Image (cartoon, rainbow, N blue to C red; front, side):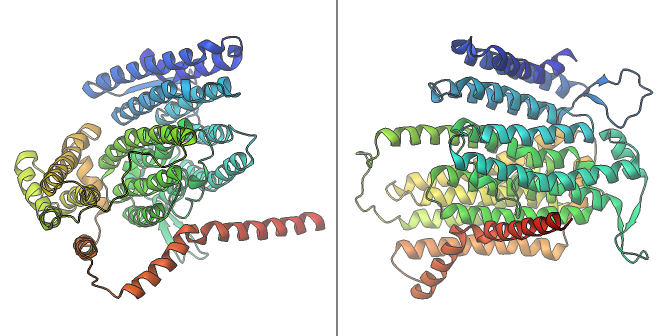
Length: 564
């Protein structure tokens, strides 16, 4: 229990010590932060082992008397999900602390940055270890405010604090819906403690009328889960509340790394924490799936037209968070956490690497001498055939083999094909990237394609079986999530069919383009692409629409204020 309490407490104490005595201990400021997060990381690993081999840790800090009202209880709840998140958060925070030592050296806000970094690490850790909805919501709010402070770190730069304020306002929209969901939860179920809430929601069924005269009755769980999901949409930058994320790149690169590796994952964690509640509302899960899928397409599309390295990574994060939300909508909650962890480490390293590239570009603005602008060879036909075959045929072979080795239940087609689908799409992305390495010999590219597919495919299948069993060890729980999120068989089959066709057409288009051949009318395709480029570079005009709505609302409020 003491270990679990120390994990969030250490970064808080470090941030407090730095803020109070940092100016007198300037040279020791990074050491304090690094030491606190490193020890917290080690304790998180120990806690993960303890919880993974035993029972969850539940500590109530307030109120002291157990008979007191359970409306607001302060404590710590560490199960396997929380323990995994703690390891991710503390390890990424430690790396960012170390990276920031020299990256921000000489900055006037050096001490303030490390104090805010410690505070933010504490808030995220306290959020994931909250034992009830209300405490989680309190730290959900604190996360928005600390994010505002750290995004506005360069407050002398006007766009920095303007975009920080924009982020805060977008989060307020989700927070209002989240708070309404909490009110309904307490009104109908009388508790905000997670375990008690899940039990009562399973045993009780309440209907709520959305129109007078009981004309449109809806299960209250569906309303609650939808309202809470709006909070997740805002925090994890899902369409249409995605507009804040691309504008946060004026903050220091370590902040971007922490935000894209930790803060942005809050929505996925929230859905996982409330997974038993969402399993009671299949319609909400379908909405979650649609929002996630739409965000994937739009985020990846807008990423392709960016000319700024950090904005490219920002839109990439938006798309990857869409994948994570999509997985939750399909009932693959454990797979979403696996995706969250992999993306957290990967994107943190990418942002820190981007910081090095930007720093180097400031000293050497010219194109690097080592770059070659000579035309590259066209890819060999063998490479193209290998890529098409491994993305269309090999996943089926892997799935069949894994069925015998890992006992993936093929009878429950949804669960098995979901793992196939995500490993398939992820491997296809890697293989398309490898295919574009024209200067590499074809046999090397072909070998890399096959190795990438097997690695990704088996990794996802491992995540589907071993990791799912680790996070949800109770018999039938994970399978119940899949059954709750099951789509209509026709819709599900069409989804897989469309994905197959798109991958196949992609390979045909790539091959014919490399050979100088055109399978479509080049002029029409170019005109469509130009119009699409304009729409995407303007971010679908969503920001413009919100600005018009905001100005109209502000003018209306001014008229009301002037009149009354």
